[in-house]
Image 1 (cartoon, rainbow, N blue to C red):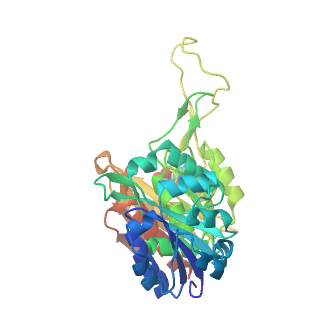
Image 2 (cartoon, helix red, strand yellow):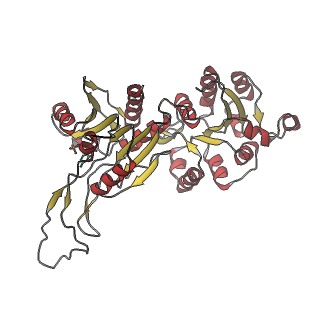
Image 3 (spheres, helix red, strand yellow):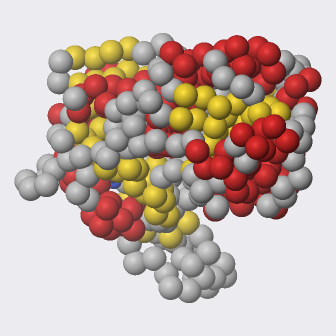
Amino acid sequence: MLAGKHVLLIVSGGIAAFKALDLIRRLRERSVQVTPVLTRAAEEFVTPLSVSALAGTKVYRDLFDLTDEAEMGHIELSRAADLVVVAPATADLMAKMASGLANDLASTLLLATDKRVLIAPAMNVRMWEHPATQRNLTTLQGDGILTVGPNDGDMACGEFGPGRMSEPLEIVEAISAALGDGPLKGRRILVTSGPTHEPIDPVRYIANRSSGAQGTAIAEALVALGAEVQFITGPASAPMPRGAQIVKVNSAREMKDAVDAALPAEVAIFAAAVADWHVAGASDSKIKKDKDGLPTLQFAENPDILAGVSQMKKGRPKLVVGFAAETDDVIANATSKRQRKGCDWIVANDVSPETGIMGGAENDVTLIHGDGSEDWPRMSKTAVAQRLAARIAEALK
Ligand code: C5P
């Protein structure tokens, strides 16, 4: 329950500051006490009066105010809340946080607090992708700062891409999770993701085109609902999910060992594109081009990790979810795959090249379960992940 919790909300100066007003409203609807802090730049985008009216309390501003200090010093202010939220978090404020600067009220509070901090970054796509910002993000995550977003989309500056601040309700969800309060609170969930690399020799391997984007989105959606996520991934190009426990593997056999080690779990989601075969007797040294003409590769079957977990006699997760990437007869193939493997749900999708799904940002899935199938409309992989996470929370009730 969020009711009765206290959030210190720092609003920094970006166009997304207007969404902070809605965020305050959403939090107040949930009986959350909000103490707002505006940076000087934030006041260019929202007025202290509107923030104060919505929060139902005074606004702490960046001006050095002896009355404020006398009523509640900045150290006390930084510690009185259950959680510190920065929305929007500009590139500038992230940089200050990453380097420990404390030259205004917001950055001082962030350095002085002993509470968890959740940031909702918002900035132009180039600024977000700039190596400096990405470096700062890595530093902040390493410091245990929680993040929500940013999302992909049209930006106020006319560009498109990651950098849009998460929507207020997504931030509310992240706040719930940060306060250990989502519907999946305390649930241990295992997610496999990415491709596998099957070695031919120490420098060559067989791989597939999976980016791991759907797996990352699923892990993040589960974390957002409060789950403890074990994320076992092959060499994916997608970013690693924030807030999950990450185990990196290369081959299918390594993935199986990592899954075995991560069990038991209440739910297991197998989003990895696991190679069906590995090269039998992969060479320990680099195969030479000119040795004896063309090499012949012998294949051996990989363990079917999903089928193995689905058919566990003891300690089987309550809910096992597989994926079926098909290029034709999607529903029929996926339905028989569900039966063959013994999993509870299958998320089926058409990965024919013309769909642009493999490696793309969107997905078009059908959820197949014991009672039939549900055709979901085409949506972003993030939206598919959120819907799946919500369905899982529902199923575990
Ligand atoms: O049999 P197929 O590879 O199409 O099945 C796909 C589903 O099975 C996915 O959920 C995938 O993660 C899982 N799988 C697995 N281990 C394998 C092959 C597939 O866990 N060796």
